Length: 269
Image (cartoon, rainbow, N blue to C red; front, side, top):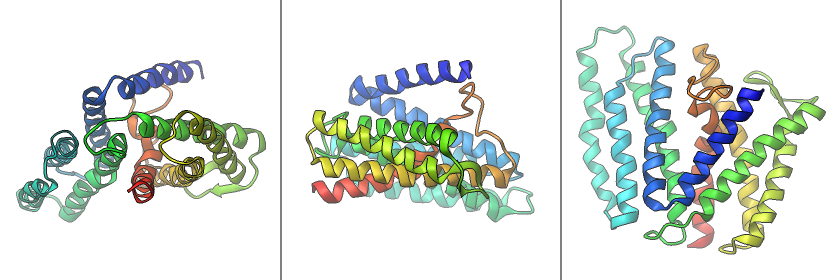
């Protein structure tokens, strides 16, 4: 528990620093983080006997993220993402030269990697440019993380004290409905506090964001649990002592971030 708390403290400091230190630090940090998380994903599926095309996947993921950043910084047209199409389809050709009994499993997991990991990180990153596509603001990314952390903390505390009814026992035996609603409650409290500090949107919009993060963040956690169980893996990595890997820390973000971005975009544009 002590190791877990120390890791969480320093991890939180780094995360907050990456948001507060400006657009370039924010961009570099989340590019690196998304690539590391993708490598964790490919490492996990490799344990399960799959052989994804890691180098091609990382190259595609890097181009997707950099194109997203270039769009916000330099009004780089997103049509240039079409340049990754030859690279994407090179996976099929590369698989021809591998002697593997399940070639299309390798191909599929290569694609799933950057769809499941990289694309959600791009949506989270774009929250920093939501109000003005060309100017960075830390308000939405910070609010997202604070609500996500509040949800995780509330779910843990309420679930530990009151948890009786299993939420989704097949994939996560420890999660309970009491913990889920506790997470929603703490996330909503944080949303209300945020609404007094950040006035880009109405308090009801912040509350809706909290509800989405709690709901889809929990589903994201369950999806990663499903993945790990299917591969018979305990943690996505060992980089964060007491917490596992980066995917274990950002599993909620992977499903919630795209939904939150669409929600806020539709309400602010």
